[in-house]
Image 1: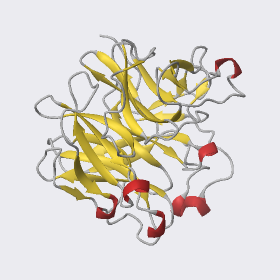
Image 2: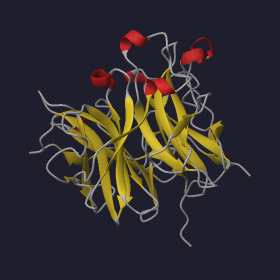
Image 3: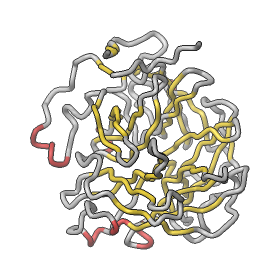
Image 4: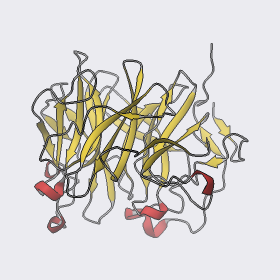
Length: 345
């Protein structure tokens, strides 16, 4: 049975997924509120002039069905916070009953680092946790994500920036229970050059690692989504699997990427109907970036795309599909395999 969701705007959710300008979309499905949330560091100033913040900040938008989204509102503003640049890739995790926003931050003359913010609501306001980044001092880092191991211990998984180390790294560092600081040394999980799909021609530009996200397949196998570029320059999502099931690996890279049509920085979540979904932005051209949502298929040992449900690739796909994309936006209604709306029992 398929569920068709009209493209017509809703009174409280007038912002269509086909219009949401976003980088690195992370979607939180929050059962407490029965809504989906995503977080952005910029908004369409022409569409929402009254919502524009006069200092670095994050905005939050929410949705009941993944298609219709609310007007952006500020959930964190810089104030006296140490960083005023590179508010990149915000994602929100629920940890010990509270909402933790993780992002990358930088200030003039300082390396970029990943730090947590906390709130009792997915809409904020968020406040900083700790005195600074939890990523290692002296490292240029980005794209931190939270992983909780089998013992219930939290880790920050992040990218050690290719600009500092050339062959970009995916790393992990253990955190305290407050997510305010590290409590051990970082470990390097793998490097960009380990992936067979990672472009080898444009090596003069460095080998990029972006956007790690961890997921357990139905059989318990631990995999990690991450992004880089192919030889054609297309932003791409691949994944690796831990051969031991532990964060420490070793990690084996899948030979064929999940998506290579100039879309990346992906994550996985379950809709309220139980469907595994993947979100990413595409294309990797800033003014054109939009959310793509995929229904996914998974087995005990594999992950694959079943269908893309937004239609945002229709006229924006890049990579090998660039010459085949259409010239006008898709106007069809959105069709999902499973009802995405939260229904309280």
